[in-house]
Image (cartoon, rainbow, N blue to C red):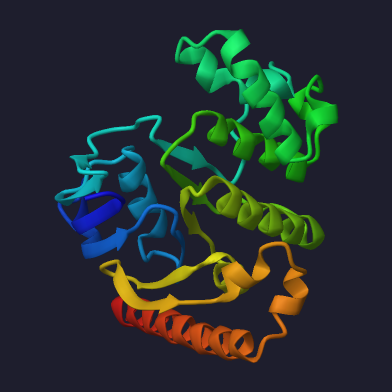
Length: 269
């Protein structure tokens, strides 16, 4: 089977005092190639834990991840990661950062050079390829991180709050870029966010997760990602269904947070 399958994933963290935290329990999902999934939920619902398991950074205590018919057993270039902070190599310029993956894979510069220049053009950084990372704004650094991820040609791109540290205007521009890259490359993308609006804008499919243990609470299939490709995202937000879904999901997450706070107060009583 092609695509990404998350099969009955559970994750339990054992603590030194003998207790444990059940971060995830029996999470199952299948993504077809080229689907764009956004994931949100209250703090402690296991969003990042799930992403790290898909990336191969964590081994689940139950279940498995299957990509294009084979089980995921660790990190691999077929799954690329974009972090909240770019995690770029400060001592390299922009072009060297983007070409790092192909270079480490043993490819010749003559083979990947044109491809890297194309990616820099796509993310709007062709004129900045010789610049040092510290000379770039936060938004530009995230563009470098996206281009570096794409240079490895992964089947799946995993994004952990990649736009969370940006100002509002830059964040909106980057949201448009993510949609553009999704359509142009046909990559499968999973994006973790705390922003309900961002999850609605960038999620062809959207998961709301519930905490303790982390599990899928509600799934939506939405039109807004397709609507937003090449369009002003502020116009998309004016769609009547967008406002309706936003209020519905905000209420859902607010109720979960209230329940978590109530449990904490009971435990402390």
